[in-house]
Length: 446
Image 1 (tube, rainbow, N blue to C red):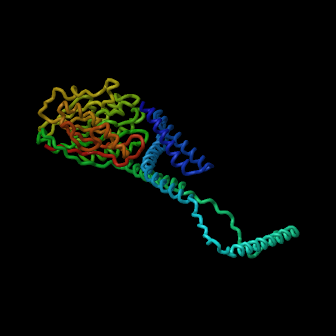
Image 2: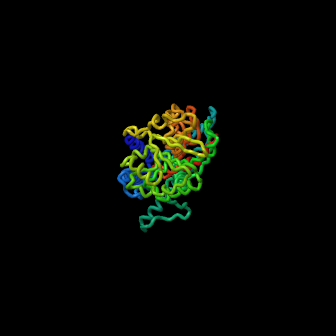
């Protein structure tokens, strides 16, 4: 169902762009044909990207298609925003055109008093006109005879020169459409260019302090490095993982929490890109829970859980561990993503959280913020999540908020504090607008 909706949206977007950027800005001819076929070619590149990445083709296949997807999206959004000012401008143009087409006022005839003698001026004018006409006829006849006799047209030095006809000026409507298209094009290119720089640059370090009422004072100052949605895939190289590991190690955390969506492919395809994770450094270890994308992997999440175990990252599969710090204990639990439910590998909160000492604080790793509903029923103090990317490409942050209770940052839902990281990578287009990549250093306070 999702695939059909996506395909329909892409086709509709291309038709809209053709209508706004091609049909309304050009006339029939080679320019329109060239632009039309260029748009068709971009659609073909987009299709090739989605088919190619699912067949495991090289990354160069994915780059042009994903960048065009981002440009297409922002062209549609910006043109849609410009529809209102464009409609207002068109209304003024139509009004001006109606005024220009209105007939000129006709001169009112002068009334002649009854019994007055008619003026002689018209007759004189008429005689002059007749004489003038006669003179023009004679001149014409003379010119004609000269032309006939010599084979050359008569030349009158007093006659004004006749200029070649000028090209028809651009209509105001065409000018308006081209101006709108230019504004949309420049804005979309600028936005995507900025988004590329943000997505491919260093993640932002977000320091966060969270107060837990039940936290043993001896656990105060315990620091979690939280990272999610790394999305190792066809557009990321090993440098992406190395940079994240280097930045996490620089924070000197007590615990590393990888909250799902680590990969977009199989171990055979991406195992080499994940290898730098073996260099993660922390006092009490690195932990991982599955995200929905681990279930999209051809080999499923099992092969990645095994691979991560060999790299020194422990997966919490509906289970918990004790973090012992300065003589106190914190329960760290993790549940599978809801995406695993279809294959019988979904979250099991009772298994992960049942039978524990409810007098001590519990931190839960759960990929999607929406899982907080179950977390609240089991008395969790703090949930660490990802999944949303903070919207990744504005204004998608508004759409994500319709499905998830928290889009990014710290919030309280049903009495449970939830921190949602924007993630350190990207999915689809290598573009982030309004939601830069993030690694969080979260400190617990009593």
